[in-house]
Amino acid sequence: MKIATRITCLLLGALGLFCVALSIHFGMDEARFDRTALPAEGTISRIQIIPNYGDDPDTRKVYITYEAGGQAYEVLSRYSNNSMREGQAINIQYDPANPSDMRIDGVVFLPVLFGVMGGIFLLALLVLTQIAGQGQRRMDGLRARGHELYADICEVSPDPSQANGEKIPYVVTVQCSSADGGTTYQFQSEALWFDPRPIIAEYRIKQLPVYVDLDRAIDYSIDLSAITKHADA
Image (cartoon, rainbow, N blue to C red; front, side, top):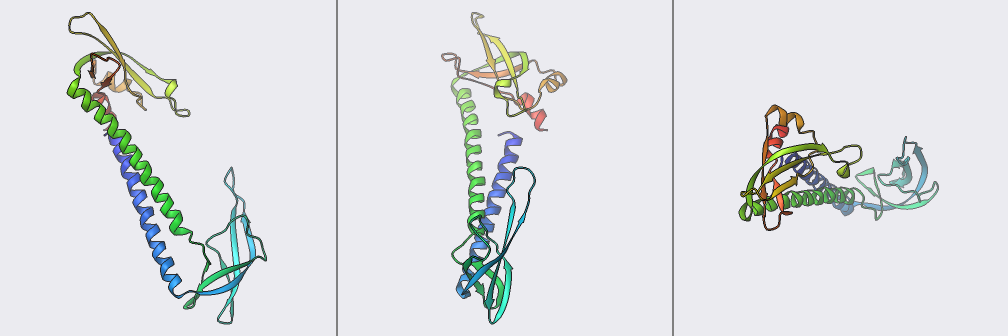
């Protein structure tokens, strides 16, 4: 697995576990709150809309008033949606030991939010490791059953067909002949998201190993480690 891929996997794993830990933390906090919370009826006293620039939706701050222990409170809600309106009655719960700690009844927001985010990051990690593993297993399989050929680098060029937005990868084309000289093979590498030409020139890389099934020449894998090890460094 390439160093860049490993770093991405580590970041996805760390973010996923962090979000899951936050989900558990907020879930335990909600459970603690529910054990002692008292119900009350609140009213949406005001909604503050803060415009955001670009395509982001405006930020809505919803304030709820209610009475607890004979005292009035106005608290910013942790949760809001576009259906909320000023003057709307809403069921809430509050902590009798700290009446300003108010939650909307039946809404469990933060544990779900961070749980979903953690799941997305961990799922992305799983997909990325599967993709990386498939590539490695394919090369290992070809090394085991295929032939190792050393092919001359004949062209390095950008490949617009694999462009990602404005970023265009490079591919390396190599060519070699069969042992008896009767067949010429030409292979194209996977996408490289950097320009490998300076590395090839600096380290005078003339050939690359190719693992190929000679009975099915379309099944091959070019070993680019001679190039990528310098890019990763």
